[in-house]
Image (cartoon, rainbow, N blue to C red; front, side, top):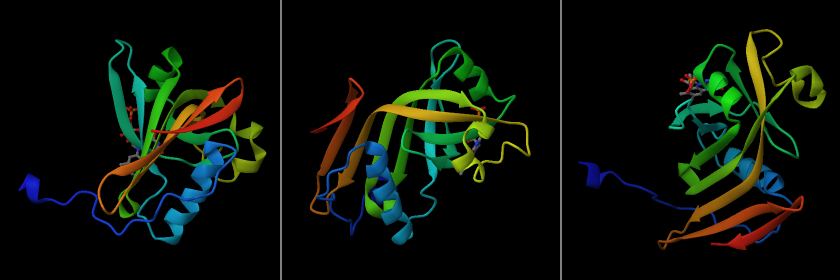
Length: 170
Ligand SMILES: Cc1cc2nc3c(=O)[nH]c(=O)nc-3n(C[C@H](O)[C@H](O)[C@H](O)COP(=O)(O)O)c2cc1C
């Protein structure tokens, strides 16, 4: 049964020819395309953290907003992930948009923010009305993966060096 269940069945879009100044603007372009093509729940992703014994933990979250630097996420204050992030703010995030054969993964830091400090995204955050912690996940490495219909894939990696984004194909 497992082997008969399809994976990565197209049709898929191609990797875009455009170049972007940052992976955040690249993400925004892919996100727009995901919404236009009716990808189900494109805001949902897997957030991985370290627990107190340095074992890896993960769970699904939605991104609440984004700006030129990163992604905003929310969690109940008493939650395990909040305790984990106090000890180690390094995280990984992974979006999988099945309908398009696209994966976007990143590594970065989750910085706790006060929602009042981010007026331009505040309207999208629930933290004012509930007891929520808000984090901005700021990537320093981000990879865009496009499955190809004929098989195989294309992968573009963004890395940050001296405050500039560099790209390479993998
Ligand atoms: C589709 C989906 C979206 C979710 N969105 C959030 C979210 O935005 N924030 C959150 O704290 N938990 C969210 N959850 C619940 C988390 O996956 C997780 O169960 C919960 O936050 C407890 O995780 P923790 O014990 O690691 O803190 C979501 C779950 C699903 C399935």
